[in-house]
Length: 479
Image (cartoon, rainbow, N blue to C red; front, side, top):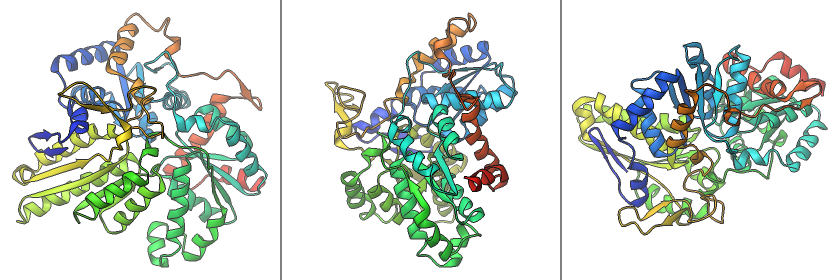
């Protein structure tokens, strides 16, 4: 997809499928705005929503303050801010663990009266979150519990039940793809003899182990630029005490394997020295290795969806600056190594940057490259739209596991959102199926919701102060 200050142009059928709703119907936008205002409702949504829903939300956000599209890290924070600013209801567009996290943080902040809603009466699952519900994960945590000085770093993309059960067995702190490296390094800085157990994402665990191994080969100054408490010796010492679960993955990021990576490297990275490669930490090792190489050469980034969005924005700003310095028209090219739903936020950010740059922005084009595996799309009989994300049947994934877009996230639709908001007009009665799961069971005398919130609060404390709490570390040392 080519993005310019005055618009965009889709190149190829898959890009056309993503671009169709980037400029939404004004009547649809006005209808949703009216519902949000009349219900005093806010919306927090993940970047992986479908293009139609994101396009309308983005247009509404210009006129309604209680809309935020982001990665999972800040969804709960923004929901709390909306509630504090007057939103009576908050709709969570994502998978179920996201709405659970939002409900838990609203309650922990004293905002119990704020409604929190999903848009489906059916479960909105997640292959990665479900892998942490398996018996294998419990057995892996038992191994951690039997190892002295163990800390469990659990990916935020898990249910409250998983977080509660884990924390009951092993001291647990949640993490996201944007803060996991800092969390692990800080743990070893404060407790050098710790064992860190990361799960459930196997690809991310493998990538972290590779990253730390590569870090141990750098000189002390380069390591301390990343974390001042570490040097080559300390990083080498932590390597055998970093463990990761080996049976969990995301069906979307699974598609970025060897075949796709080889094509990206040959057709783009090696062919054009100006191509940047971005990759989420959840991608398989082949794509991670290429993006890590690109990052070291100043041609890419590895991290969260926000890290990817920030990297693309910085690249566009740099291109605009060079045009302003007289270097002539430029084209930036970025390979998008994560779910295609990111394109709405990317296009919006780029168009705003280019438009704000004036004449210099008019001389910059930005190309977003979607590395879509052939088995992750289906052909249609429509001449105008010959391919669509996902295979022709099933849940939208190929038999190999790879998807063009997340089938679970796509259970959130514009129709489902408007239907829920319309029903809220008659009050909350009869909408219990749309609430996040409440978890009636208790663990060691505490509710699952209360115990599952503890690892999230440990992460919030780490984000605020840059250190693990004395309470958490004391728990680690006493095991």
